[in-house]
Image 1 (cartoon, helix red, strand yellow):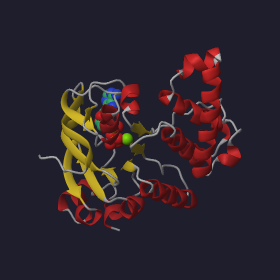
Image 2 (cartoon, rainbow, N blue to C red; image 1 turned 180 degrees about the vertical axis):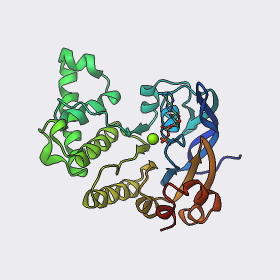
Image 3 (cartoon, rainbow, N blue to C red; image 1 turned 120 degrees about the vertical axis):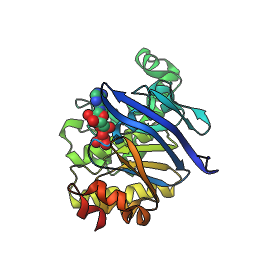
Image 4 (cartoon, rainbow, N blue to C red; image 1 turned 135 degrees about the vertical axis):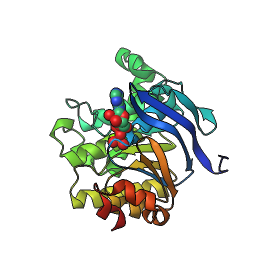
Length: 263
Ligand SMILES: Nc1ncnc2c1ncn2[C@@H]1O[C@H](COP(=O)(O)OP(=O)(O)O)[C@@H](O)[C@H]1O
Ligand SMILES: [Mg+2]
């Protein structure tokens, strides 16, 4: 498989197994600069495992991947984050007893010089950086519609707002590629609409997005291209239209969400 000239992320022949379960089998993926790339497939297809492998939480058994030409597999999660790949989690990972603002400020610390230790020692440089981080965090909260909740504890946010907070925190790391694991899960129709507007705005600002999502309506509206996994294998890729009409994809969803794919 040759590389596309506009590819931001290149993943090649990634495999990962857990005991007898082959979560990923020789999966290759190109994500182009500036696109919203959808990663879909039935439950258990390997979507989250691919995220976990690309972001350094799982060690791949085989394969390689680059972001902007830099090798990412085999590096630690924070190193991959510093190279520009940020992600959110299917099961939220917020600091429930910290404020909304603090949750976003923590995301930013991967980028600072003083880091968490410096911040604790309260050096002059750390204080200046802390101020800048707080201002930047506030801008991200404004962008994600959470500024009015800046001082609320994360645990008191609605589920939809907690998902937006995860996005704000990921954005605080200044990513070039933002990977979202089911961001619309648990959202009502209004929340999903505003999520859609936010993701389109981020793309228009130049961010590249990788999106795992079960809401097929949202996927078809948002994504430039899609990759489909089933039982750890890639079974299709292409435009939403191509994928939607692919007999293998329709068969993969039969009995689970056939009507969603074709509607
Ligand atoms: N940490 C893990 N330990 C054992 N099995 C896992 C682990 N992570 C994923 N799996 C297995 O890998 C397969 C793919 O899971 P997952 O990547 O979560 O799928 P998806 O996100 O597409 O629903 C499933 O069979 C799942 O049980
Ligand atoms: Mg998953």
